[in-house]
Image 1 (cartoon, one colour):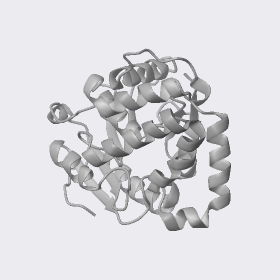
Image 2 (cartoon, rainbow, N blue to C red):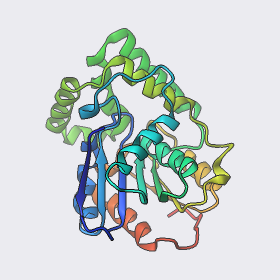
Image 3 (tube, rainbow, N blue to C red):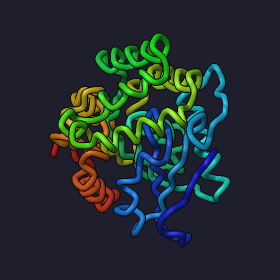
Image 4 (cartoon, rainbow, N blue to C red):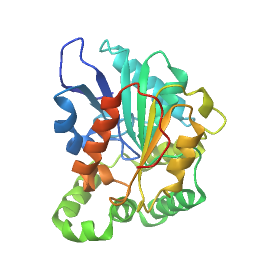
Length: 267
């Protein structure tokens, strides 16, 4: 698995692992690196089956496998205690890590995630799956920004979107891998297990997320014993990109509070 260690390199540095969503690649976190690297050892990685970690995935691929392979890759680099910042799928990987490896995970931030898949999100995923299977990779990639970004932001960033589209087409993870990762994501259900997650969790969402209704954020936070929820008013599913400064500020505030008592009120 391709993994990069950025920021502080001293052994005492607190470690944050940044886990991307369905796209799976480390480049998603570029808007956060400067804000985090001065104070943390920051780990970014291309998830198995994507980007520079391209390889065929097993037919029974699961969230538990995603968590296990990340723990193994970190252990190979002597990283055995860390926090997780995860976007959508990456946030669920963080929850899975907290369940399966509680002695290793210090805290988890879940960005536009969920406790169990919402019917609207399932419908969106099924539409994207149909686009891939019936219209092909190009149609799938071209439609992706519609689920990620607010309309006005897209209109103002046409050149960037064109560059992203070309990059995604050139480095597409492959139909089979994407479908296996998507199916693992859609099967994930943390409702029966949420009370076992004792680590501090930040559930942060954007209220204008077109893919994941923001009510999912409150449901997730309410089910966890030690969670805080924050709702940003704007930014879409990828608000860590579209409003990076606002997102980074909120994330750093939560990190600064460290092991503070849980808070459930939305900000």
